[in-house]
Length: 623
Image (cartoon, rainbow, N blue to C red; front, top):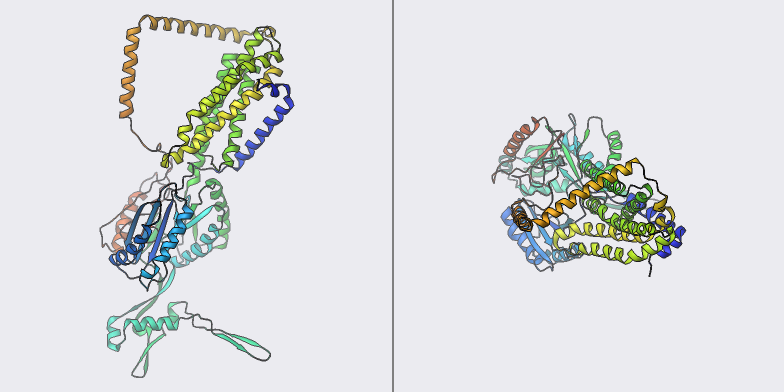
Protein backbone atom coordinates (compact mmCIF):
# COMPACT_ATOMS: atom_id res chain seq x y z
CA UNK A 1 0.00 0.00 0.00
CA UNK A 2 1.36 3.39 -1.01
CA UNK A 3 -0.14 6.19 1.05
CA UNK A 4 1.51 8.89 -1.03
CA UNK A 5 0.37 7.57 -4.42
CA UNK A 6 -3.00 9.35 -4.33
CA UNK A 7 -1.25 12.66 -3.68
CA UNK A 8 1.38 12.08 -6.38
CA UNK A 9 -1.19 11.27 -9.06
CA UNK A 10 -3.49 14.16 -8.04
CA UNK A 11 -1.24 17.22 -7.76
CA UNK A 12 -4.12 19.72 -8.00
CA UNK A 13 -5.91 18.12 -5.09
CA UNK A 14 -2.70 18.05 -3.06
CA UNK A 15 -2.04 21.70 -3.81
CA UNK A 16 -5.57 22.72 -2.78
CA UNK A 17 -5.31 20.73 0.46
CA UNK A 18 -2.03 22.44 1.34
CA UNK A 19 -3.44 25.86 0.47
CA UNK A 20 -6.43 25.16 2.74
CA UNK A 21 -4.05 24.14 5.53
CA UNK A 22 -2.09 27.38 5.12
CA UNK A 23 -5.29 29.46 4.98
CA UNK A 24 -6.73 27.98 8.18
CA UNK A 25 -3.37 28.34 9.89
CA UNK A 26 -3.04 32.02 9.00
CA UNK A 27 -6.59 32.72 10.20
CA UNK A 28 -5.88 30.87 13.45
CA UNK A 29 -2.67 32.85 13.94
CA UNK A 30 -4.54 36.14 13.57
CA UNK A 31 -7.16 35.07 16.13
CA UNK A 32 -4.81 33.61 18.73
CA UNK A 33 -4.61 35.54 22.02
CA UNK A 34 -1.16 36.76 23.04
CA UNK A 35 0.16 36.22 26.56
CA UNK A 36 3.41 35.53 28.35
CA UNK A 37 2.44 32.08 29.69
CA UNK A 38 -0.39 29.60 29.05
CA UNK A 39 -3.66 30.27 30.82
CA UNK A 40 -3.62 28.23 34.04
CA UNK A 41 -6.66 28.96 36.18
CA UNK A 42 -6.34 28.21 39.87
CA UNK A 43 -9.79 27.28 41.24
CA UNK A 44 -9.77 29.94 43.96
CA UNK A 45 -12.69 31.82 45.52
CA UNK A 46 -12.39 34.83 47.81
CA UNK A 47 -15.18 35.40 50.36
CA UNK A 48 -15.49 38.83 52.00
CA UNK A 49 -17.61 39.86 54.98
CA UNK A 50 -17.94 43.22 56.74
CA UNK A 51 -19.13 44.17 60.21
CA UNK A 52 -18.17 47.82 60.85
CA UNK A 53 -16.76 48.48 64.29
CA UNK A 54 -16.07 44.85 65.17
CA UNK A 55 -12.63 43.92 66.45
CA UNK A 56 -10.49 41.31 64.66
CA UNK A 57 -11.22 38.84 67.45
CA UNK A 58 -14.97 39.35 67.00
CA UNK A 59 -14.69 38.94 63.25
CA UNK A 60 -12.75 35.71 63.71
CA UNK A 61 -15.11 34.16 66.25
CA UNK A 62 -18.50 35.41 65.05
CA UNK A 63 -18.00 35.57 61.28
CA UNK A 64 -14.95 33.65 60.04
CA UNK A 65 -15.45 30.57 62.23
CA UNK A 66 -19.12 30.30 61.28
CA UNK A 67 -18.38 30.47 57.58
CA UNK A 68 -15.36 28.17 57.75
CA UNK A 69 -17.44 25.51 59.48
CA UNK A 70 -19.76 25.42 56.48
CA UNK A 71 -17.06 25.77 53.83
CA UNK A 72 -15.14 22.78 55.20
CA UNK A 73 -17.92 20.46 53.96
CA UNK A 74 -17.46 21.45 50.29
CA UNK A 75 -16.00 18.68 48.13
CA UNK A 76 -12.62 19.26 46.51
CA UNK A 77 -11.44 21.96 48.95
CA UNK A 78 -7.66 21.79 49.29
CA UNK A 79 -6.96 24.70 51.65
CA UNK A 80 -8.81 27.45 53.45
CA UNK A 81 -7.21 30.53 54.98
CA UNK A 82 -8.82 33.55 56.61
CA UNK A 83 -7.61 37.02 57.49
CA UNK A 84 -9.46 39.11 60.05
CA UNK A 85 -9.05 42.81 60.69
CA UNK A 86 -11.08 45.69 62.09
CA UNK A 87 -14.58 45.15 60.71
CA UNK A 88 -13.43 42.94 57.85
CA UNK A 89 -12.93 39.23 57.14
CA UNK A 90 -11.54 37.62 54.00
CA UNK A 91 -11.54 33.85 53.47
CA UNK A 92 -9.58 32.32 50.60
CA UNK A 93 -10.80 28.93 49.37
CA UNK A 94 -8.33 26.96 47.22
CA UNK A 95 -9.79 23.96 45.37
CA UNK A 96 -7.94 21.15 43.62
CA UNK A 97 -7.31 21.52 39.90
CA UNK A 98 -9.90 18.91 38.96
CA UNK A 99 -12.70 20.97 40.55
CA UNK A 100 -14.78 23.13 38.22
CA UNK A 101 -14.63 26.72 39.45
CA UNK A 102 -18.26 27.48 38.51
CA UNK A 103 -19.59 24.45 40.37
CA UNK A 104 -17.41 25.35 43.36
CA UNK A 105 -18.82 28.90 43.33
CA UNK A 106 -22.36 27.51 43.51
CA UNK A 107 -21.39 25.38 46.52
CA UNK A 108 -19.84 28.42 48.21
CA UNK A 109 -22.99 30.46 47.63
CA UNK A 110 -25.10 27.65 49.10
CA UNK A 111 -22.88 27.46 52.19
CA UNK A 112 -23.07 31.25 52.68
CA UNK A 113 -26.87 31.06 52.57
CA UNK A 114 -26.82 28.16 55.03
CA UNK A 115 -24.67 30.09 57.50
CA UNK A 116 -26.67 33.33 57.19
CA UNK A 117 -28.83 32.70 60.29
CA UNK A 118 -25.78 32.10 62.45
CA UNK A 119 -24.02 35.32 61.45
CA UNK A 120 -24.43 38.59 63.39
CA UNK A 121 -27.75 40.24 62.55
CA UNK A 122 -26.32 43.75 62.32
CA UNK A 123 -24.10 43.01 59.32
CA UNK A 124 -24.83 45.70 56.70
CA UNK A 125 -24.78 43.12 53.90
CA UNK A 126 -24.38 39.34 53.61
CA UNK A 127 -20.94 37.91 52.79
CA UNK A 128 -19.98 38.11 49.12
CA UNK A 129 -17.66 35.98 47.03
CA UNK A 130 -15.73 36.30 43.78
CA UNK A 131 -13.70 33.97 41.61
CA UNK A 132 -10.08 35.04 41.55
CA UNK A 133 -6.85 33.84 40.00
CA UNK A 134 -4.01 34.54 42.43
CA UNK A 135 -1.45 34.06 39.64
CA UNK A 136 -3.00 36.67 37.36
CA UNK A 137 -1.47 40.08 38.01
CA UNK A 138 -2.97 43.36 36.74
CA UNK A 139 -2.09 44.08 33.13
CA UNK A 140 -2.32 47.87 33.38
CA UNK A 141 -1.97 50.48 36.14
CA UNK A 142 -3.44 53.97 35.66
CA UNK A 143 -2.75 56.85 38.05
CA UNK A 144 -5.01 59.91 38.42
CA UNK A 145 -3.85 62.97 40.32
CA UNK A 146 -4.54 66.69 40.43
CA UNK A 147 -2.57 69.61 41.89
CA UNK A 148 -5.73 71.68 42.51
CA UNK A 149 -8.84 69.49 42.81
CA UNK A 150 -9.53 67.51 46.01
CA UNK A 151 -8.92 63.78 45.88
CA UNK A 152 -12.62 63.08 46.39
CA UNK A 153 -13.32 64.75 43.05
CA UNK A 154 -10.51 62.81 41.39
CA UNK A 155 -11.91 59.61 42.91
CA UNK A 156 -15.33 60.43 41.46
CA UNK A 157 -13.89 60.51 37.95
CA UNK A 158 -11.77 57.41 38.57
CA UNK A 159 -14.58 55.32 40.09
CA UNK A 160 -17.76 56.32 38.28
CA UNK A 161 -16.33 57.47 34.97
CA UNK A 162 -13.11 55.64 34.08
CA UNK A 163 -13.41 52.37 36.04
CA UNK A 164 -16.96 51.67 34.90
CA UNK A 165 -16.12 52.38 31.27
CA UNK A 166 -12.99 50.21 31.36
CA UNK A 167 -14.98 47.38 32.97
CA UNK A 168 -17.13 47.32 29.83
CA UNK A 169 -14.10 46.63 27.60
CA UNK A 170 -14.11 43.08 26.26
CA UNK A 171 -11.58 41.00 28.18
CA UNK A 172 -11.46 43.11 31.36
CA UNK A 173 -12.26 41.12 34.51
CA UNK A 174 -12.21 43.81 37.19
CA UNK A 175 -10.77 47.20 38.05
CA UNK A 176 -9.29 47.63 41.53
CA UNK A 177 -8.97 51.08 43.05
CA UNK A 178 -6.01 51.80 45.31
CA UNK A 179 -6.20 54.78 47.63
CA UNK A 180 -9.95 55.27 47.21
CA UNK A 181 -11.13 58.66 48.51
CA UNK A 182 -14.90 58.52 48.05
CA UNK A 183 -16.64 61.68 49.24
CA UNK A 184 -18.44 61.60 52.61
CA UNK A 185 -19.52 64.01 55.37
CA UNK A 186 -18.01 63.50 58.83
CA UNK A 187 -19.68 64.63 62.03
CA UNK A 188 -17.10 64.81 64.83
CA UNK A 189 -19.15 65.35 67.98
CA UNK A 190 -17.73 66.63 71.27
CA UNK A 191 -18.42 64.28 74.22
CA UNK A 192 -18.58 67.25 76.60
CA UNK A 193 -21.18 68.98 74.44
CA UNK A 194 -23.23 65.77 74.39
CA UNK A 195 -22.98 65.31 78.15
CA UNK A 196 -23.92 68.90 78.97
CA UNK A 197 -27.13 68.58 76.94
CA UNK A 198 -27.91 65.03 77.97
CA UNK A 199 -27.78 63.69 74.42
CA UNK A 200 -26.50 60.22 73.57
CA UNK A 201 -24.47 59.34 70.51
CA UNK A 202 -27.29 57.07 69.35
CA UNK A 203 -29.63 60.06 69.22
CA UNK A 204 -27.18 61.88 66.99
CA UNK A 205 -26.99 58.88 64.64
CA UNK A 206 -30.78 58.56 64.52
CA UNK A 207 -31.18 62.27 63.83
CA UNK A 208 -28.70 62.15 60.95
CA UNK A 209 -30.49 59.13 59.51
CA UNK A 210 -33.90 60.79 59.80
CA UNK A 211 -32.69 64.07 58.34
CA UNK A 212 -31.08 62.52 55.27
CA UNK A 213 -33.79 60.59 53.47
CA UNK A 214 -34.56 59.77 49.88
CA UNK A 215 -37.70 57.66 50.00
CA UNK A 216 -40.70 57.24 47.69
CA UNK A 217 -43.39 59.51 49.12
CA UNK A 218 -46.38 58.67 46.97
CA UNK A 219 -48.71 60.11 44.34
CA UNK A 220 -51.70 62.49 44.48
CA UNK A 221 -54.46 61.44 42.14
CA UNK A 222 -56.99 63.96 40.89
CA UNK A 223 -59.83 63.99 38.43
CA UNK A 224 -57.72 65.37 35.61
CA UNK A 225 -54.13 65.18 36.85
CA UNK A 226 -51.76 63.09 38.93
CA UNK A 227 -48.83 64.52 40.92
CA UNK A 228 -45.77 62.64 42.14
CA UNK A 229 -44.72 63.79 45.60
CA UNK A 230 -40.99 64.39 45.93
CA UNK A 231 -39.09 64.27 49.23
CA UNK A 232 -36.29 66.85 49.31
CA UNK A 233 -34.55 65.48 52.36
CA UNK A 234 -31.35 64.41 50.63
CA UNK A 235 -28.29 66.20 52.04
CA UNK A 236 -25.19 66.44 49.86
CA UNK A 237 -22.52 68.36 51.81
CA UNK A 238 -21.42 69.35 55.27
CA UNK A 239 -23.11 72.77 55.08
CA UNK A 240 -26.49 71.05 54.68
CA UNK A 241 -25.89 68.83 57.72
CA UNK A 242 -24.85 71.56 60.15
CA UNK A 243 -28.34 73.04 60.84
CA UNK A 244 -29.82 69.55 61.30
CA UNK A 245 -31.89 69.38 64.54
CA UNK A 246 -30.73 66.53 66.76
CA UNK A 247 -33.05 67.01 69.78
CA UNK A 248 -34.94 69.61 71.81
CA UNK A 249 -33.71 70.71 75.23
CA UNK A 250 -35.65 73.22 77.37
CA UNK A 251 -37.88 73.90 74.40
CA UNK A 252 -34.97 74.88 72.17
CA UNK A 253 -33.61 72.87 69.24
CA UNK A 254 -30.09 71.52 69.44
CA UNK A 255 -28.39 71.65 66.03
CA UNK A 256 -25.71 69.24 64.89
CA UNK A 257 -23.14 72.00 64.50
CA UNK A 258 -23.53 72.86 68.21
CA UNK A 259 -22.35 69.37 69.19
CA UNK A 260 -19.07 69.34 67.25
CA UNK A 261 -17.53 69.74 63.81
CA UNK A 262 -19.27 68.76 60.57
CA UNK A 263 -16.77 68.69 57.71
CA UNK A 264 -16.49 67.55 54.11
CA UNK A 265 -14.26 64.47 54.05
CA UNK A 266 -14.00 60.94 52.62
CA UNK A 267 -15.42 57.58 53.64
CA UNK A 268 -12.04 56.13 54.64
CA UNK A 269 -9.34 58.65 55.46
CA UNK A 270 -6.97 55.87 56.60
CA UNK A 271 -6.12 54.86 53.03
CA UNK A 272 -3.65 56.65 50.79
CA UNK A 273 -1.86 56.05 47.49
CA UNK A 274 0.90 57.97 45.74
CA UNK A 275 2.05 58.17 42.15
CA UNK A 276 5.76 58.91 42.49
CA UNK A 277 5.55 61.60 45.21
CA UNK A 278 2.01 62.86 44.45
CA UNK A 279 -1.19 61.70 46.14
CA UNK A 280 -3.21 59.87 43.52
CA UNK A 281 -5.95 57.36 42.80
CA UNK A 282 -4.50 54.24 41.17
CA UNK A 283 -6.54 51.86 39.01
CA UNK A 284 -5.29 48.28 38.64
CA UNK A 285 -6.93 46.49 35.69
CA UNK A 286 -7.09 42.70 35.50
CA UNK A 287 -7.96 40.70 32.40
CA UNK A 288 -10.28 37.74 32.04
CA UNK A 289 -8.63 34.32 31.71
CA UNK A 290 -7.89 33.28 28.14
CA UNK A 291 -8.11 36.78 26.65
CA UNK A 292 -5.49 38.54 24.56
CA UNK A 293 -3.46 40.70 26.96
CA UNK A 294 -2.04 42.88 24.21
CA UNK A 295 -5.45 43.40 22.60
CA UNK A 296 -7.11 44.27 25.90
CA UNK A 297 -4.40 46.81 26.77
CA UNK A 298 -4.65 48.37 23.30
CA UNK A 299 -8.43 48.66 23.68
CA UNK A 300 -8.03 50.42 27.02
CA UNK A 301 -5.34 52.74 25.69
CA UNK A 302 -7.62 53.78 22.85
CA UNK A 303 -10.06 55.13 25.45
CA UNK A 304 -7.49 57.29 27.26
CA UNK A 305 -7.72 60.29 24.85
CA UNK A 306 -11.50 60.29 25.38
CA UNK A 307 -11.05 60.22 29.15
CA UNK A 308 -8.59 63.11 29.05
CA UNK A 309 -10.89 65.16 26.83
CA UNK A 310 -13.93 64.69 29.10
CA UNK A 311 -12.14 65.29 32.42
CA UNK A 312 -11.00 68.65 33.77
CA UNK A 313 -7.61 69.70 32.46
CA UNK A 314 -6.26 69.81 36.01
CA UNK A 315 -6.59 66.01 36.38
CA UNK A 316 -3.52 64.13 35.16
CA UNK A 317 -4.02 60.62 33.80
CA UNK A 318 -0.79 58.61 33.51
CA UNK A 319 0.08 55.03 32.63
CA UNK A 320 1.98 53.70 35.61
CA UNK A 321 2.72 50.19 34.32
CA UNK A 322 1.88 48.38 31.08
CA UNK A 323 2.33 44.61 31.21
CA UNK A 324 1.79 44.27 27.46
CA UNK A 325 5.16 45.93 26.79
CA UNK A 326 7.14 43.06 28.31
CA UNK A 327 4.82 40.51 26.69
CA UNK A 328 5.30 42.09 23.26
CA UNK A 329 9.07 42.13 23.68
CA UNK A 330 9.19 38.56 24.96
CA UNK A 331 6.92 37.15 22.26
CA UNK A 332 8.75 39.11 19.55
CA UNK A 333 12.07 37.71 20.75
CA UNK A 334 10.70 34.18 20.59
CA UNK A 335 9.22 34.85 17.13
CA UNK A 336 12.62 36.06 15.95
CA UNK A 337 14.22 32.92 17.38
CA UNK A 338 11.65 30.81 15.53
CA UNK A 339 12.36 32.54 12.22
CA UNK A 340 16.10 32.25 12.81
CA UNK A 341 15.74 28.53 13.55
CA UNK A 342 13.80 28.01 10.32
CA UNK A 343 16.45 29.93 8.37
CA UNK A 344 19.31 27.92 9.90
CA UNK A 345 17.56 24.62 9.21
CA UNK A 346 16.99 25.55 5.57
CA UNK A 347 20.60 26.72 5.26
CA UNK A 348 21.93 23.45 6.66
CA UNK A 349 19.72 21.50 4.25
CA UNK A 350 21.08 23.52 1.34
CA UNK A 351 24.70 23.08 2.46
CA UNK A 352 24.33 19.31 2.52
CA UNK A 353 22.04 18.82 -0.48
CA UNK A 354 23.64 21.59 -2.57
CA UNK A 355 20.59 21.73 -4.80
CA UNK A 356 18.04 24.55 -4.81
CA UNK A 357 15.04 22.46 -5.89
CA UNK A 358 15.97 19.68 -3.48
CA UNK A 359 16.29 22.25 -0.69
CA UNK A 360 12.95 23.96 -1.36
CA UNK A 361 10.93 20.74 -1.34
CA UNK A 362 11.67 19.59 2.26
CA UNK A 363 11.79 23.21 3.43
CA UNK A 364 8.11 23.65 2.51
CA UNK A 365 7.23 21.18 5.25
CA UNK A 366 8.41 23.73 7.83
CA UNK A 367 5.98 26.63 7.24
CA UNK A 368 3.10 24.29 6.37
CA UNK A 369 3.42 22.30 9.59
CA UNK A 370 3.95 25.30 11.84
CA UNK A 371 1.23 27.47 10.29
CA UNK A 372 -1.42 24.76 10.51
CA UNK A 373 -0.46 24.23 14.16
CA UNK A 374 -1.76 27.76 14.82
CA UNK A 375 -5.22 26.69 13.62
CA UNK A 376 -5.25 23.70 15.99
CA UNK A 377 -4.08 25.93 18.86
CA UNK A 378 -6.95 28.33 18.22
CA UNK A 379 -9.53 25.52 18.13
CA UNK A 380 -8.20 24.20 21.46
CA UNK A 381 -8.32 27.63 23.11
CA UNK A 382 -4.56 28.03 23.47
CA UNK A 383 -2.61 31.28 23.31
CA UNK A 384 0.47 32.54 21.53
CA UNK A 385 2.90 32.56 24.44
CA UNK A 386 6.47 31.68 25.32
CA UNK A 387 5.64 28.02 26.03
CA UNK A 388 3.77 27.35 22.77
CA UNK A 389 6.35 29.25 20.70
CA UNK A 390 9.14 27.31 22.41
CA UNK A 391 7.36 24.10 21.36
CA UNK A 392 7.31 25.32 17.76
CA UNK A 393 11.02 26.19 17.92
CA UNK A 394 11.81 22.67 19.11
CA UNK A 395 9.52 21.24 16.44
CA UNK A 396 11.51 22.96 13.67
CA UNK A 397 14.20 20.29 13.91
CA UNK A 398 11.63 17.48 13.93
CA UNK A 399 9.24 18.49 11.17
CA UNK A 400 11.90 18.62 8.48
CA UNK A 401 13.32 15.14 9.17
CA UNK A 402 10.47 13.20 7.55
CA UNK A 403 10.60 15.33 4.40
CA UNK A 404 14.37 14.84 4.06
CA UNK A 405 14.06 11.06 4.50
CA UNK A 406 11.36 10.99 1.80
CA UNK A 407 13.43 13.17 -0.53
CA UNK A 408 16.63 11.15 -0.08
CA UNK A 409 14.88 7.86 -0.82
CA UNK A 410 13.30 9.24 -3.99
CA UNK A 411 16.67 10.62 -5.11
CA UNK A 412 18.23 7.19 -4.47
CA UNK A 413 15.77 5.63 -6.91
CA UNK A 414 16.49 8.35 -9.46
CA UNK A 415 20.22 7.63 -9.19
CA UNK A 416 19.42 4.03 -10.15
CA UNK A 417 18.09 5.30 -13.47
CA UNK A 418 14.36 5.37 -12.74
CA UNK A 419 12.18 8.15 -14.11
CA UNK A 420 11.07 11.02 -11.87
CA UNK A 421 7.46 9.82 -11.51
CA UNK A 422 8.48 6.18 -11.12
CA UNK A 423 11.11 7.09 -8.52
CA UNK A 424 8.58 9.14 -6.58
CA UNK A 425 6.08 6.27 -6.53
CA UNK A 426 8.60 3.57 -5.63
CA UNK A 427 10.55 5.68 -3.14
CA UNK A 428 7.44 6.90 -1.28
CA UNK A 429 6.07 3.35 -1.16
CA UNK A 430 9.26 2.04 0.43
CA UNK A 431 9.64 4.81 3.00
CA UNK A 432 5.98 5.63 3.74
CA UNK A 433 5.60 3.17 6.62
CA UNK A 434 8.95 4.27 8.07
CA UNK A 435 7.88 7.92 8.08
CA UNK A 436 4.59 6.97 9.71
CA UNK A 437 6.40 5.05 12.46
CA UNK A 438 8.90 7.89 12.93
CA UNK A 439 6.10 10.43 13.30
CA UNK A 440 4.11 8.38 15.79
CA UNK A 441 7.19 7.50 17.84
CA UNK A 442 8.14 11.19 18.13
CA UNK A 443 4.60 12.10 19.22
CA UNK A 444 4.61 9.25 21.75
CA UNK A 445 7.57 10.88 23.52
CA UNK A 446 5.33 13.79 24.58
CA UNK A 447 2.37 11.68 25.71
CA UNK A 448 3.65 11.50 29.34
CA UNK A 449 3.96 15.30 29.35
CA UNK A 450 0.39 15.54 28.06
CA UNK A 451 -0.97 13.55 31.01
CA UNK A 452 1.10 15.16 33.76
CA UNK A 453 -0.91 16.35 36.75
CA UNK A 454 -0.74 19.38 38.99
CA UNK A 455 0.23 22.93 38.09
CA UNK A 456 3.22 21.79 36.03
CA UNK A 457 0.99 19.50 33.99
CA UNK A 458 -1.45 22.35 33.31
CA UNK A 459 1.43 24.57 32.25
CA UNK A 460 3.09 22.02 29.93
CA UNK A 461 -0.14 20.60 28.49
CA UNK A 462 -0.13 23.29 25.80
CA UNK A 463 3.53 22.55 25.06
CA UNK A 464 2.91 18.84 24.49
CA UNK A 465 -0.15 19.36 22.28
CA UNK A 466 1.55 22.08 20.20
CA UNK A 467 4.72 20.15 19.42
CA UNK A 468 2.76 16.92 18.89
CA UNK A 469 0.44 18.65 16.41
CA UNK A 470 3.38 20.11 14.48
CA UNK A 471 5.02 16.68 14.21
CA UNK A 472 1.78 14.99 13.06
CA UNK A 473 1.20 17.66 10.43
CA UNK A 474 4.81 17.31 9.24
CA UNK A 475 4.28 13.57 8.83
CA UNK A 476 1.18 14.21 6.74
CA UNK A 477 3.03 16.79 4.62
CA UNK A 478 5.93 14.38 4.09
CA UNK A 479 3.52 11.71 2.80
CA UNK A 480 1.58 14.08 0.57
CA UNK A 481 3.19 17.35 -0.50
CA UNK A 482 6.84 16.24 -0.49
CA UNK A 483 6.51 13.22 -2.85
CA UNK A 484 4.17 15.21 -5.13
CA UNK A 485 6.74 18.01 -5.46
CA UNK A 486 9.52 15.49 -6.01
CA UNK A 487 7.58 13.94 -8.90
CA UNK A 488 7.20 17.35 -10.54
CA UNK A 489 10.30 19.40 -9.80
CA UNK A 490 13.25 17.07 -9.12
CA UNK A 491 15.75 16.64 -11.92
CA UNK A 492 17.62 13.38 -12.60
CA UNK A 493 21.19 13.47 -11.21
CA UNK A 494 22.68 12.78 -14.66
CA UNK A 495 21.39 16.09 -16.02
CA UNK A 496 22.89 18.16 -13.23
CA UNK A 497 26.08 20.12 -13.79
CA UNK A 498 28.01 20.75 -10.61
CA UNK A 499 29.48 24.20 -10.19
CA UNK A 500 32.46 25.54 -8.33
CA UNK A 501 30.55 25.87 -4.98
CA UNK A 502 29.55 22.22 -5.20
CA UNK A 503 33.12 21.05 -5.78
CA UNK A 504 34.47 23.17 -2.89
CA UNK A 505 31.81 21.85 -0.51
CA UNK A 506 32.43 18.32 -1.73
CA UNK A 507 36.10 18.56 -0.78
CA UNK A 508 35.07 19.98 2.60
CA UNK A 509 32.67 17.09 3.28
CA UNK A 510 35.27 14.56 2.20
CA UNK A 511 37.71 16.14 4.65
CA UNK A 512 35.15 15.91 7.45
CA UNK A 513 34.49 12.27 6.56
CA UNK A 514 38.23 11.56 6.70
CA UNK A 515 38.50 13.21 10.15
CA UNK A 516 35.55 11.19 11.41
CA UNK A 517 37.08 7.99 10.05
CA UNK A 518 40.38 8.64 11.84
CA UNK A 519 38.69 9.54 15.15
CA UNK A 520 36.47 6.46 14.99
CA UNK A 521 39.49 4.24 14.30
CA UNK A 522 41.34 5.78 17.26
CA UNK A 523 38.41 5.17 19.63
CA UNK A 524 38.01 1.55 18.50
CA UNK A 525 41.71 0.89 19.15
CA UNK A 526 41.52 2.35 22.69
CA UNK A 527 38.40 0.76 24.10
CA UNK A 528 39.33 0.87 27.79
CA UNK A 529 40.17 4.62 27.96
CA UNK A 530 37.00 5.30 25.98
CA UNK A 531 34.86 3.43 28.53
CA UNK A 532 36.62 5.19 31.42
CA UNK A 533 35.98 8.63 29.89
CA UNK A 534 32.35 7.65 29.25
CA UNK A 535 31.92 6.59 32.90
CA UNK A 536 33.49 9.80 34.19
CA UNK A 537 31.19 11.82 31.93
CA UNK A 538 28.19 9.97 33.33
CA UNK A 539 29.31 10.60 36.94
CA UNK A 540 29.91 14.30 36.21
CA UNK A 541 26.46 14.53 34.60
CA UNK A 542 24.76 13.05 37.68
CA UNK A 543 26.70 15.40 39.97
CA UNK A 544 25.89 18.49 37.91
CA UNK A 545 22.23 17.45 37.80
CA UNK A 546 22.09 17.50 41.59
CA UNK A 547 24.16 20.68 41.94
CA UNK A 548 22.49 22.85 39.31
CA UNK A 549 19.94 25.39 40.70
CA UNK A 550 16.33 24.36 40.24
CA UNK A 551 13.17 26.41 39.80
CA UNK A 552 9.60 26.26 38.56
CA UNK A 553 10.06 28.67 35.64
CA UNK A 554 13.08 30.57 34.32
CA UNK A 555 13.46 34.05 35.76
CA UNK A 556 12.31 36.83 33.44
CA UNK A 557 13.12 40.52 33.63
CA UNK A 558 9.88 42.42 33.01
CA UNK A 559 11.14 45.74 34.38
CA UNK A 560 8.73 45.54 37.33
CA UNK A 561 9.41 45.13 41.04
CA UNK A 562 6.76 44.59 43.74
CA UNK A 563 7.71 45.39 47.34
CA UNK A 564 5.61 44.68 50.43
CA UNK A 565 6.10 46.42 53.76
CA UNK A 566 4.69 45.49 57.15
CA UNK A 567 4.91 47.37 60.45
CA UNK A 568 4.19 46.32 64.01
CA UNK A 569 0.64 45.66 65.15
CA UNK A 570 -1.21 48.72 66.37
CA UNK A 571 0.80 51.27 64.41
CA UNK A 572 -1.14 54.43 63.62
CA UNK A 573 -2.01 55.43 60.09
CA UNK A 574 0.04 58.63 60.29
CA UNK A 575 3.11 56.71 61.44
CA UNK A 576 2.64 54.14 58.70
CA UNK A 577 2.46 56.92 56.11
CA UNK A 578 5.64 58.47 57.52
CA UNK A 579 7.58 55.21 57.25
CA UNK A 580 6.21 54.46 53.81
CA UNK A 581 7.13 57.90 52.53
CA UNK A 582 10.66 57.38 53.82
CA UNK A 583 10.94 54.20 51.74
CA UNK A 584 9.41 55.94 48.72
CA UNK A 585 11.99 58.73 48.93
CA UNK A 586 14.76 56.12 48.61
CA UNK A 587 13.13 54.67 45.49
CA UNK A 588 12.58 58.15 44.05
CA UNK A 589 16.31 58.91 44.18
CA UNK A 590 17.19 55.91 42.00
CA UNK A 591 17.79 57.26 38.47
CA UNK A 592 16.84 53.92 36.89
CA UNK A 593 13.26 54.08 38.20
CA UNK A 594 10.84 55.48 35.65
CA UNK A 595 7.73 55.66 37.86
CA UNK A 596 6.26 53.92 40.88
CA UNK A 597 3.23 53.79 43.13
CA UNK A 598 2.93 53.38 46.86
CA UNK A 599 -0.16 52.59 48.89
CA UNK A 600 -0.94 52.42 52.61
CA UNK A 601 -4.02 51.34 54.53
CA UNK A 602 -6.66 48.60 54.66
CA UNK A 603 -8.71 48.16 51.55
CA UNK A 604 -9.19 45.87 48.58
CA UNK A 605 -7.24 42.65 49.01
CA UNK A 606 -5.43 44.03 52.06
CA UNK A 607 -7.43 43.89 55.27
CA UNK A 608 -4.73 45.10 57.68
CA UNK A 609 -3.77 48.73 58.16
CA UNK A 610 -0.16 47.95 59.10
CA UNK A 611 0.84 46.32 55.82
CA UNK A 612 0.79 46.68 52.06
CA UNK A 613 -0.14 43.14 51.13
CA UNK A 614 -1.88 43.17 47.78
CA UNK A 615 -0.80 46.75 47.10
CA UNK A 616 2.37 46.44 45.03
CA UNK A 617 5.07 49.02 44.67
CA UNK A 618 5.36 49.07 40.90
CA UNK A 619 8.70 50.07 39.45
CA UNK A 620 8.87 50.09 35.66
CA UNK A 621 12.64 50.38 35.20
CA UNK A 622 14.31 51.99 32.23
CA UNK A 623 16.60 49.31 30.79
